[in-house]
Length: 300
Image (cartoon, rainbow, N blue to C red):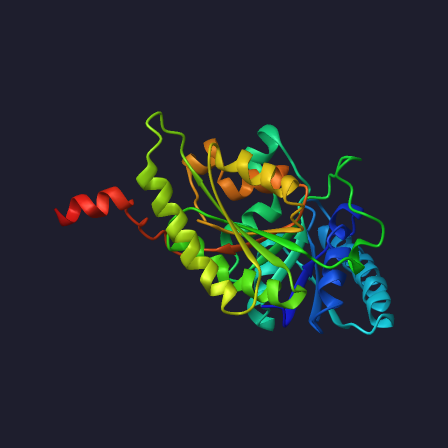
């Protein structure tokens, strides 16, 4: 997963917020870095001349970033292309056989985000490889420590929802947990129910225990949590309570009106989480495991 990382930049300090986190990985893994910048052509007269000038500026900018990384001993190349950012990023991933994308989101909210979407959120829904994404709009209280790139990851929060789909994030979490010798915190959030279904809680605990054994067989310290409430609220709350350094989760890649109205859990977490996300896209929505009580009913 970490062999070849496409790092998407647009010349802004916001986009560069991902670089310290990439360096954090490079302290443990000798990955190849591919810097990518898309130049969007202007829809005006003389747009070719404008695009040529913008392309030259973009190459100069990426060249400077590449030079800084090369001085640190990083294997790095850069690629500037004309076109939409989403298309260019995915194109480079395919051509260079990249194994991960790293980028920051600009954190747009409200009507503009609903109409246009952020580049990061569209990439999350379309990328064939895991996406490491950072929300750079930290508050002063949430600001990462100085020289955060040298601080190892100690705790990974891995939310699952009881579906096989959610477990697609497990291999990525395993790789990072082993790389950083980190603890994996497995979280399952159940819906609030007035009757407090004990069988459902027991089934969730058994499900997490089964996943935990996958980590423990590889010598990874694992902690499991079953909680009730809103998934986004519980994920963000547990990040802070357990001092998680990274959230590793899947996205269903949903599109259409329903996503525009409600957003996905992953995208809502991204807009609120004080730590980066590593997101694995699931191509197909698989059926949820039936609850323990339903399985028993089916056998009766």
